[in-house]
Image (cartoon, rainbow, N blue to C red; front, side):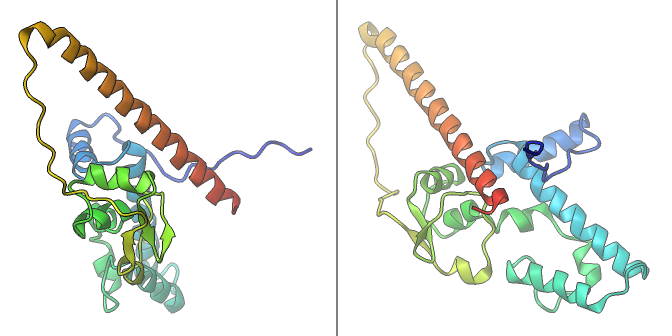
Length: 210
């Protein structure tokens, strides 16, 4: 038997890990796109860093390769991040938002299929969203421009139902209401934990090529 396989880290942590300005900026993006944790954001930032590194090599002449230049632009254009007429210099100005907007979670929300980014994530992880007729369960999946046209509900659900707020609890029932709120909060935490485990398993299967 060989040594057990170790999963390779797919992202790099920020070098200025304790920089307050960077922390505030990253937290703002995490909240805006309802990301599960910072790891999802760091993956995107690492991808951008790798693209910029390859572009700098091409621009410096260290790696003169027209085929590589075309492949980079074609790949980003395929996902709707840049236009197919973009130049190498344009790739140095890539923004994190451009990548985050191409995630399945963001597209579901932008298409009006969910009322919020958070709800879009829940719909995906609970199996209500499909791409090309197949159930999609990864909120962070990057979609091509073609796939974006085929995002729909896998199972029908009305996300715009107006639910009447519950009446304010009477003073005698205040304690019961607080206990119910705590139970509801615990249920949400359990659901989030299940979603995290499911996503990690999906990533492991993808790494193994299953």
